[in-house]
Length: 442
Image 1 (cartoon, rainbow, N blue to C red):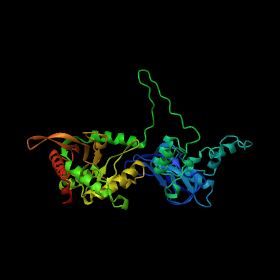
Image 2: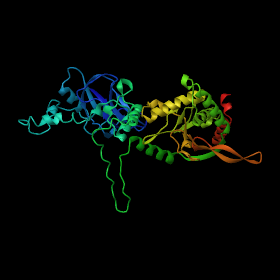
Image 3: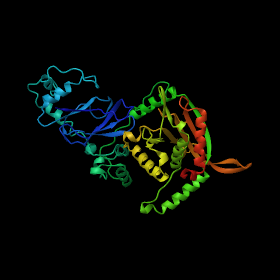
Image 4: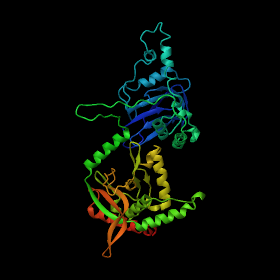
């Protein structure tokens, strides 16, 4: 019987998705593992792979459709020997306006096929008229429309006015990736023949500056809803601490300079300040497990390991990939994992298990020159650490004025789960590790 392809739920918070593009067209043969479409979720743009094989008989929801409810039928595959009547019978099992639940059983399947294929009402003579209507859609896409490319590569090409069809892909099965588009931009070739789509016209409202209104992505909507709910439901309070990081910067510079000599042999590692912060957070959570909790109706969840989520800015939003059991990993492993996760987060290639289920979040804006800020909790977690820039400041040492590199960190806390004394104890442990990194090895 025909196989219904439904909008999948790719994250616990996902209630709807957007179909960005179909990689297969009606009539194409589909094998298990083939990429059917690109779907935008509330976290990333992901590829929808076929689980079954067959022929893509009907695309129910076209490309560039937003707000498609989870579990709604978006396409139908048919098997060998199944005709149009079997396809229409399968579609008739789905109520026209109720995506998740099947409704009407469709009393007369044979009569429906004739109602759908005929575009004009009169059937007798206008045979030439339907023919152009059926033939018109396929030639419309440009050569690049069917090119396999990552979501980030496609976005970069669109912004630069490049034709993906003229770019040689270096990814799996010739897939165009970010590096390929970057190389094309640098070489100044592969400019799209037709002019790019005109920018939307600004709207003018009396008493207001002109503006252009754009559709919210699912990620942007999810961030708005989750942050509003977090601020409303969780009673935030904040604790701030200054950490002197001269020793950390000295050790980091020495490790990076020594590993630079071994980079060509594949043994080098480049540590960031954030790598030390992630490791110090995980070790501090080991020392103060009462801070490694989350609020749950009816009780507290006390986590047995520190899974540290790290906020990463991506186009149109924010994702927090997770370093699992960060306290049991060395700095080199954390650095390598973080670099990989951040790169794939920006390309929309993270799998759900890589950004779901962290126990504590780190948000670092120091690289942007931000001295100090307070972050909003990432529910259901009870703590998030906001890290500012390490900069030279005047300090008093042994009664005398001196200069030290100081980094300000602010801990946002859900007071339902963690009290002030516990938060202060955690920050004290965190500062001990950050100010004297060799203690991370003990």
